[in-house]
Image (cartoon, rainbow, N blue to C red; front, side, top):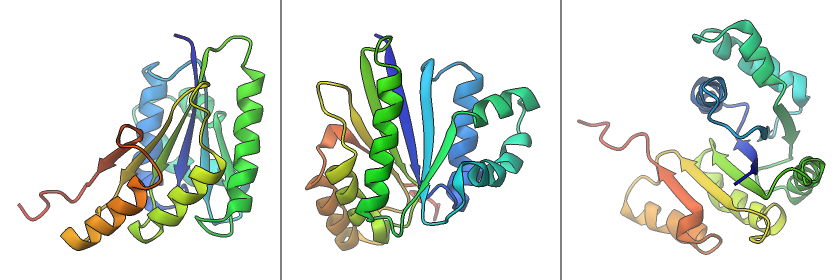
Length: 188
């Protein structure tokens, strides 16, 4: 199946995105594990633009085992959209326009237009972010999938986990969400 992929790194200017998420995406790119037609959008509150985001993440990418040419080729797929907050409907609506423009430019060669939202943001803004994505950037199911990857401590205890889980599961189905708690087992 030919598929087009839009990866949206929410919290793109933060440490998790710079140190882990973008380097991981570069590894996938270098190993030819991303679709031929893909774009990576960073979304955050900073007003930095495409080149500003590329400049912020480049130092973390050039430390890796990949050549400068591979890094620069990867960075050409990276774009940026800012919003006043993670729940800013205007910012997300602008991003939706960009996503649709990218997808329509590939429509003759692709059969699916998938969207993957990677949360590299504090748990305190998960709910507002998910609600805004649901209102603005959900992919029509007949065109492709929408997935959310949530990586953070998923609450401090059972009560805070249940609150976060309810906020997300009221917006997205279980097969649309993937949770990664990188503090799981930290005490051991």
